[in-house]
Image (tube, rainbow, N blue to C red; front, side, top):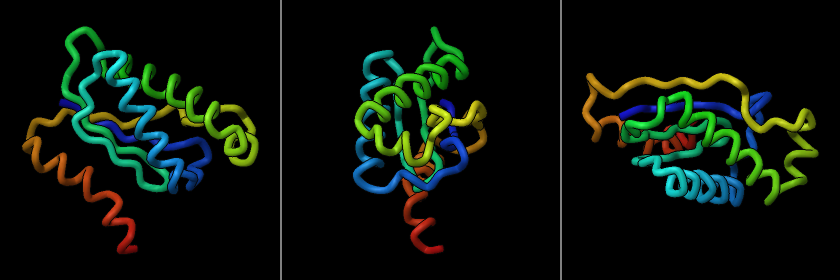
Length: 124
C-alpha cells in the first residue's frame, strides 16, 4: 500500500465545496477506469491525501502521472473559471508529490490519519 500526498500549483486553497466533492469523484473514477485501488482519499483545502493498494503493473510514479494528468483536465473542464482565476499557467498540480509505502504502520492507522485530515484543519 502507498500513501500519496500532493498539492495544487501555487498552493492555492481552492478545494472547498463543491470543488472538493467533484475532485473526489473524478479521482475515484480514474481509479476505477485504470484499476487503481483507492482505499482512502481526503481533500483538505490545499492538498490531497490518498492511500492506494499496490497495483502490480504500475509503479507509484505511473499512478501519480495518471491521476494528476486526467484529474487536472477533468477538473478544469468542470470549472474553467477556477483555471482562469487561480491557475493562469494552465497547470493544476505541482510536479512534485510525496509517496511512502505503508509498512511500519497498520492500514487502519494510515486510513484514520487520512480520514482525520479535514477534522485537524478545522481545529486550526
